[in-house]
Image (cartoon, rainbow, N blue to C red; front, side, top):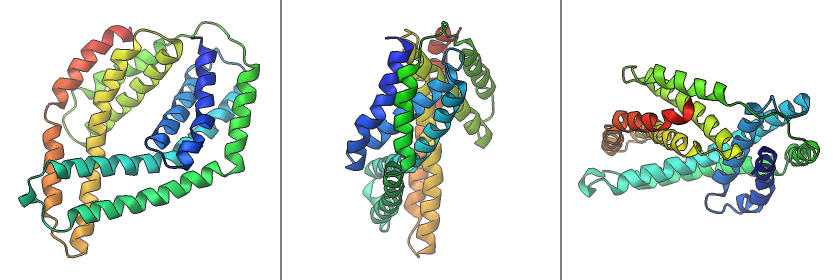
Amino acid sequence: MSLLTSLRAQAGALATLEPDVRDDRHDAVHKMRVAARTLRANLRTFQDVLPGEKKRLALVEELGWLGDALGPAREAEVLAERVLDLLERTPPEYVQGPVRERVGAVFALERESALGLVTEALDSPRYRRLLKNLEAYFASAKPGKDPDLSHLHRRVRKRMRAALPMPHGAERDTAMHDARKAARRARYAADALGLPGAKPIKALQDVLGEEHDRVVAASALTDLAAGAHQAGENAFTYGVLIGLVRCDSRDFDKRVRKAWKAAKPSLK
């Protein structure tokens, strides 16, 4: 598959997924968000081989707007699933107070509000212009010179080498998240070009992403605990859940080093 064919497919996915997103079908918001983020990343990555810089940069900005509109709905969905999964793993005697009710109510409210923002974005003239401009851009685009991904690979190597030796804590979490974003962009580019090195890079991205999700979950549980305490509820269970999240992170260093070792040959 050529680069332009891949980019056109990503652009077409936005319109294809729209009915399912409007109907709140399972995983539809996630798929549209991934399509928007992938296309945005690749329009930036391949700036040297794609035509029409002004039009390309305008599309990058508008895809960023769409991704931001889709983000909160997806994040509320992921957090709810993760916290409910933690509750399923918790012995019943450690579930004290209306924990499930609070978790369900808080995330349902957040997702309902976020889905309203998604619908507002899809109903807007701005979204229609984005689809029209994407179609026009790729209808006239012609392939340029062969792309070079070495700058993406250098960025992943630099961020991983910076993050790995850092002591555990918030700064390391941020550094690992930065490395994840770099790996994700490199993987999107490799996928777009049909390169064989995409699979180990994706495996590294997945390990980093799982840890980032645990960091976000721990923060959300802290907020839930504070809300429960203010409402006069027992907050004990939220501490148990945070403990489970920390336990799940115990072998992160081992897994991320293994994934990094496997990905390095693809990042020369």
